[in-house]
Image (cartoon, rainbow, N blue to C red; front, side, top):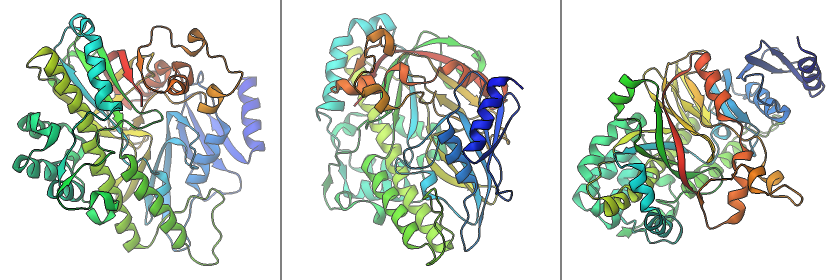
Length: 474
């Protein structure tokens, strides 16, 4: 064992963790809790280890409820890092008899959507300014015309994208009246679970539950933090047969959407964190982590339906963000198909082997399923195919993972030179100068080792690589 690794393991032990490392996977457990399942972290030796993230992961594995239920397995992807709400980003937890609202958090169904378009990159860049001005209006200045009938809103929240589409075919409003609704219908097969979960409109904020035309300010918005819309070039195809099947070819334009359920998810997430606290048995000690599971079967059912309601909203939010971009390409370049490759969630709880699997900042990577792993706005992003790896709980990373906090980049005295931040040559469109700094490439881990470690572990296989051309950050 290398001396540096010995020092690291001793330091983690002083923080109350039992940790071992086999050169590829860390195994982590709270000291003195032999009954808790060990958490496993796939992490190549050249990526940083963060003690706080290990603490959060071990605490998640040790969760118990006085009424029963158990945490079966906990895994973390190689982009994992500390989460602000007590659960490490990149965590995947398998439970039986309980669910953990905090293991998903408030950004329910944050996820990725990827399209490709047969537009030469040179032709696109020749009209860059016209494209950017239109998209700034849609994404930042509110020129988007997003309107839904109340029946379409109810159908969306209850049934997901198929319910919304059926009602929209009857009464297309706003920007959607210009969309190819038959194409959207065909593309629903390329959305994870069809974009259809069993929700309940009663869990929506009151602003969404009104009669007549609904103009929700959160729909078709990117959101803050690491969310983005990025235009890319498909620079390499590694699995030609698979890429051809998915409609992906070298040299194409691509666009990638990373967003979630916005205020809808925040409403559901915060409501259920409070309900989990209120439902905690009187007199029972509260976990030090502050993360509280639900064990009562009726509360579990209610929470999952509430979470599904927010997830349905997020599927439509990504669809509309992408549709604004697709419609703009059609304005500028004529009849562009720009088909959907795939849409996949990150933060969600779903049935798994008789229990539940909650992912927070982790991408489903089931056998034969498309997996989308973005880099920073100065690095490549990857289209992969999942291999259904059981040890990894059929989960892959949802990006490169933060290496530096937003505070450390924005504080006084931080080096804000373009080259130091990795921003040289990066085309970032935003109205907030601080967002460009907080989300600079230097804030993220290198995407190469993150992807390579998952390929080596048999979690995913590479299909194509995309290079960024421009990134929209709200």
